[in-house]
Image (cartoon, rainbow, N blue to C red):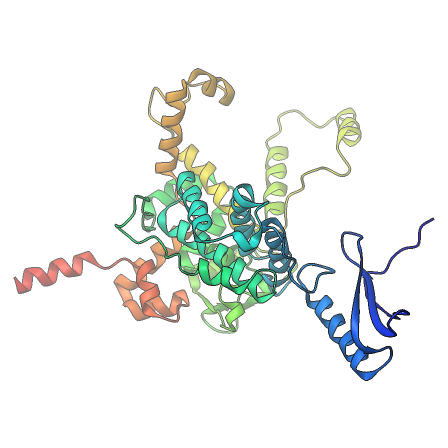
Length: 435
């Protein structure tokens, strides 16, 4: 049996020269050694060995304290993803959405330039990656955001001595795409969803998601904050309750977040009050349990002992998919998408016929008709963040911009104006009086 080699360096004498040397095994299993200055066991040699240990401990690539001349873009991306998974974490230790963004961005860079030496990744390569982003169909602002992430990856790599500083400096010269000066499509501004559309969607949502929608519409909080509400995070000592999310968008900046919960929202939460204050008020697990209970109550045939025995033997003890304890922003949005598809079906002849199954309906449609259905669904769907825009618009119209800014938790009023649409009726009234 072979001896297991150590990844931490050992301090040994070099017999030929009498100097000290460091010996260790890197992450690839390759034995490394380095001669140290000064005689063995001298203060100069020991100081150099201590410095080497610190460099190896802080190196982004295990076992490598200096940037190899042939380090590839793949190695830089992998090292940065390892760093991102340690850095971008919430207070409870879970990963933030920024990690997913870096993973997606790195995938396209890896496909184009993964095997290229990192020192050769210059402005032209970055512009080629940007063109790939454009070809995918992303809008200008999203392309600029993800190109900015590529720049930050190489900035971090330069700080870790994985690439020369000149690589980051060269990439920084690539400017972002400007509005009206490129052929990239512009993103459409997020508009508030009309109350009538929300009301038409609610009957097609389960009780838990419908409660989420109502709570967000009444408080104007972010979708993630609404999903994570727990009874223990509510301060119900006053007439207006205060919800302080343990995790929120600006927590990493040391900002506090307080969501005002008025009487209507309080009455809504009372309907979902859990027995355990530390559990999530709106939960997919509760939604599944309520669905099973409803199906059981509406069952027409009785449950015979033989049915129960068969179900006990066929039911999986460890199912592959179990309902989560809390909704994510993604699952919350998917539930709304499905409800919108039911609430706003496409017109005939694209719509499903009576008695036609989903598979039969989709098989009947031609390729062009399927594309028309997808476009119809896209035009009829709305997403949870539009509820926040709706809340901001109503508050600004009735109580002013400052009230909307406070309730949304924005530090600057110009950010609030993105969420709250201007009151067009006020402009018309002033125009009638002045002109």
